[in-house]
Image (cartoon, rainbow, N blue to C red; front, side, top):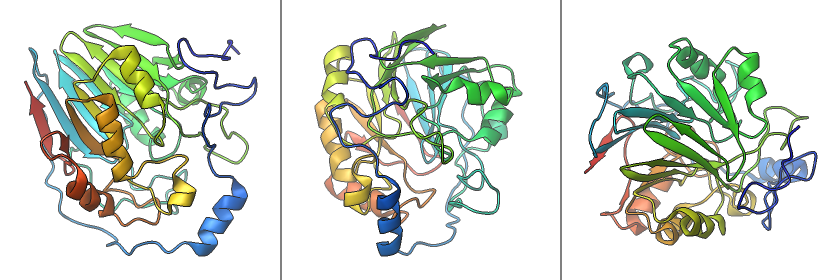
Length: 318
């Protein structure tokens, strides 16, 4: 394994066997999970909400314009400078390794997968099933047009499923592609797809740098000092995609997920010109209801600079 003792320019986050959150609380363990499940009181939400009107994005957006389409959950289509980038794509009915159990989709995707344009890069923030969905990645790989980017030690899973080309990035590492570069930046979270692989692969956010400006995709993250570190290293982003859902109960979720109030603080620390809420409204993964994060965010966020899009809705920036 390459030396993962310290990503360039960011704190140490690997102990030789597993990754960890530096100077922060670690993800809850098994006993915490049991306590949560024994005391959990999830807010009731409809089993399915048929309110999505899918949109069909253009094949390209040229010039300085940026078009951002929320597909669902943390899946966002970014189009600028003639390039198309997709984040954490999931079109499956469940965020699960099995088709018959696990969190079920409560809303359909806002873009049908067959209506996607050619995708130049797919950014994967970590290996949880609601962010790394192998059936979806397999469909994208058959197009033979995309470069797949994953955190450190995450490529083996994709390659074993004939998904590629794939590049691994540790915190602080970068990859240059035509028209833009991708920088891996810290997040406070964890990784696992089974019982024995916890934190064997890294988690991250990404900065997409192009002549048009910076776009920050936070992936899945708790609130922490990394937002200030990212701003200090790269400057304020033109756009930030910030997770807001799956935050209750706070005692259990706060080491790995932000609530709406913390996302607003992150937006302010980053000095992002605009932020868009992600990680809400499609899968109910915690005790907060399906649309609770959206309602809370709309009540507290600056509406001119922190947007809440529905699945299939897009925003354009000059």
